Length: 361
Ligand code: F6R
Image 1 (cartoon, rainbow, N blue to C red):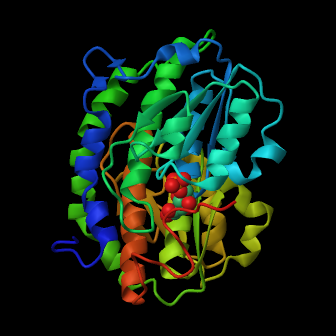
Image 2 (tube, rainbow, N blue to C red):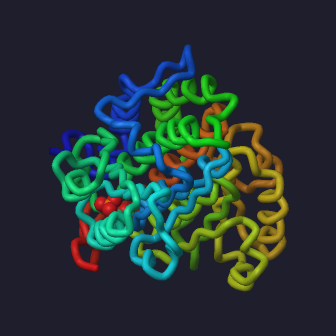
C-alpha cells in the first residue's frame, strides 16, 4: 500500500535512495573503478561498433542520457524513439548493439523495434524492471534496473534506476570497444553513484519543490531547458509535469529556444533552466534571453552553478559528479510536478487518458 503517503507517486519518489542503492549493488567497485554485471555475457558486445537505444517516453529520456555518455566515450550511439524506429534507425547491421530500454518490458513500440533490430542480425540487450517480461525474454542479454514495483503511472524511481544502470552499461561498453574508452574519472563517477542515495535524501529534505509549487499555479505554460546531459533531464521534467498536472509544458535543448519557442515566452511562462553537468555556461545566455521577455527563471543545479546569479528562484542539488547532478535535478522536478499536480487536485497516480504500460503500437 501507500503507507503514510497520499499517493504512490510520492512514495515511489521517496523510495529512490533504496532503489538507487539496489541499482548499483554488487555492480560497482569505486576503489578500483570497476563495474561488473552478474549474469550478463559480455560476448554480446564482440561484434559491436555502434549502439542504438530504442525506447518510449520516460525511458527514451534515460536512453538519451546514456547515448550522450557513450558518444563522449567514443562509441557512436543514438537514442531512437521506438515508435519512429523504422523511419530513423538507418541501416542496421550485426555491429549495431540495440538496447531496448523499457521499465515494463511490454511496450509494444519498443518490442517491435527490438524485433526489427534482431531480425537484421543486431545483438540485443533489454534494460528493464520486470523479471520475465517480454523484452527480457526476447533480448539476447538482460540488465535489470531493480527498482521494485512502480504503481504510479508516472515513472519516477524507474527513470533514475534506468539512468544509473545505463550509465554503468555505457562505461562497460566503452571499455570493450576498439577506439573507445571509459571516462578517465570513472572511479570518481562510481564513488558519486555510491553517494547518490544520500544525495537524493538531501534533496528531499530541502523541501524546496513544495514551496515553489505554491506560487507557480497561475501560469500559462511551463518550459524546461538544458544542454548536454541536462537536455534529457529537461525533456523528462516537462513530460512528468504535463502528464500529471495537465498543464502545458515543453522541454527543449537550451539552444533551441531562440529558433522558435522563444516566440511563446512571456511573463506567463516560467522557465526551469537546468544548470547541471558540464555544459551550463551557454544556458545562462539562453535563460537570460527568456528573462528579458519577462519569464521567471527557476534554476535547477548546485548552489554555485552558472545560473545561480541570474535566476529568480533556485532548486538546489548537492554538488556532486557532473554526471550525477542531472539525476538529482530530476528528483527536484519530480517533486515540483507532484506538488503542483497535488495543488490542482489531479488524479496523480492514474492521470487521465494514460496507462502504465502501452501494449498497442
Ligand atoms: C512517463 C511514462 C511513459 C513510459 C513509456 C514507456 O511517466 O510512464 O512515458 O515511460 O510509456 O514505458 P516503458 O518504460 O514501460 O517501456
